[in-house]
Image (cartoon, rainbow, N blue to C red; front, top):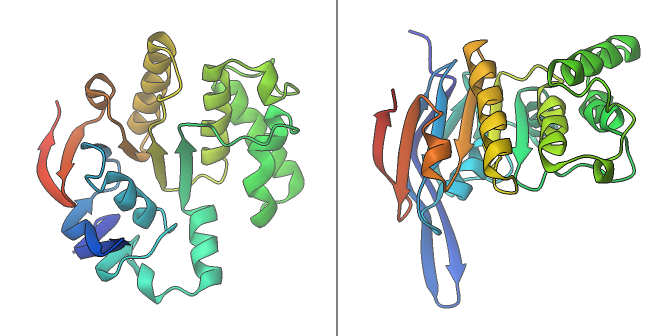
Length: 229
């Protein structure tokens, strides 16, 4: 039997705050299949961002296990972790994280510096993504010359340029107005229909309805896990 794309078993993460210990993740069991579109919600301090950081290999758990694409993440050395982050996971953040002095095209090309794709093929892939996301006439624009929605589209193109199996989105519409948020979510739905696995953290109920599955967290635990549609 094949394993899910993501599988966690009794995942724990603790933080010391003064004299007390905060259980950011408290024995979380989670399975996400290839092709899922999952929204994770919860109040501040519920553990959703900690979960996202561990699934994105940006942080390590204190206990439990995490398998990504059949690999035990705890067994990976630093080089393998960096490679996993670059080739297997695409990240989309609330604040875009674009380099201000680089053009849209240069920003999208960044992750390909560390891949084995040749330069011409890399450029073709980046151009194709930007055109597909409606930015064909914005290739040479820097982030400050783009609207919020356009910046997030550049960030999505950058996240997808290595063709990663998993896309992690942390509050991807947090800095966007409602109309632009809707456009970005329609784009996520389309990517998911084409087979992209997406895990998204959001605090907005309306945004979460675009996902096929909704997970609610509280006090470091999964409180609710259901199909949206």
